Length: 154
Length: 356
Image (cartoon, rainbow over all chains, first blue to last red; front, side):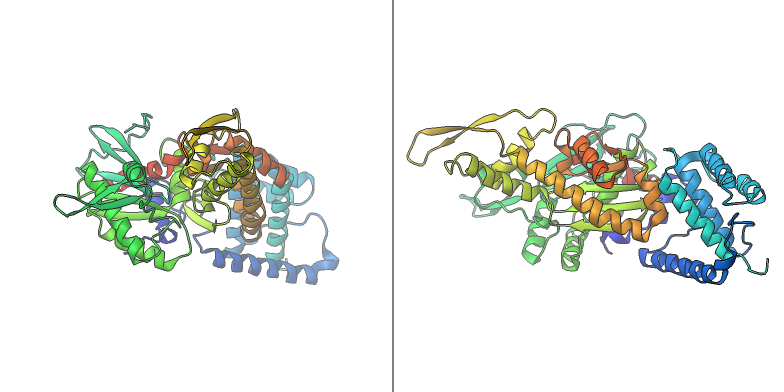
């Protein structure tokens, strides 16, 4: 037996609270990881983005994201992005944000339509708030990363 | 003892079976127990200290704990969890005696489900010693779990049930011996942080020094008195200077008034806590977990622990942290931040008992 409070079972707690398991629910794209693993994952993604950016520097133009990547990593990342937007602002604000990104020509109308369909897969949060500049910056990072995951031949 | 749980949304009891769900916070200054008794939640709050003495008639060793031990044996009373965990075998033995005496006095059934709220301190030996204390305790034969104090404390701050488990939020526990912070993402802990540099005990020490200075060396108070000054008079909303009297060694008494010695150390404490949380904990969280950082900082930060009981500290902390981070932060606390960890632990224990 250990009483180390850092070694508790988060899945058991979620079950007790009657909330959806992270593997099936709102957090499907980001399974439970230790902080170190999360850091590695972020570094991996940023490396991918950087590598792609160097290759495509001369071709970087608006709209940044013309289609969502079809790979598992790509769809997972897109879900994680939408989960973030909905978790912060709720369905309505997430929809308005995606529309705003289209107006800024960060994404194409086709991407907007695809994202709109997926937004309602995520539950409304208990607390919500307006999106801030910091949230939009994070969205831009998601968009850049998603763009970097696109097959350059498309 | 006071019944501090009167919300109807979650009564914390476990009627489906006879297992008593108990929440325990073994704190360095105070220990809190919560469990259902006669259909209501019973709260036991006592000083985490023990004194032993020999019975003059039988020669037997007698044990006293809590306020009675502190009052009757101020010179020999032992606070065995001063650093948050029992540091050595002697303190582990004392902690075991203390806890056994405490739970026996409450008559809690052995076959209970017990959840402990424990500070997240990097001290393997201390944790091993605490494990021994818990394993040898007379309760928890049915089930034992332990969770971080900051998570348990956030449970009553975030709602009437276990809403905190499904949230992404930051919890800050202002304890006597450490300042603990952690971001939680649907119950998963991200970036647990703990420091022994900003503590309630340090505030007590500074109050004792400040009293000596404010009275031009005429008054020396011990740390227990300093803690009582802090708890009884510390107030960020409506502090009023107060008067106390000491007995002079050569007879007679000396009356003195305290104007600055309580609030200045408390002010410094909040500044230092804000500095630690903003520049050490949150900056690391932002670096490693960008998305949870963005989400959590837009939501209320849960403030718990004994220091969070100082009236108005919630608003002052909120204001100064907002200023430091240059963004609007909201802070929430449970009605009784000092009981919150045990209350949250009890709610988890009740759910566990229901599921047996």
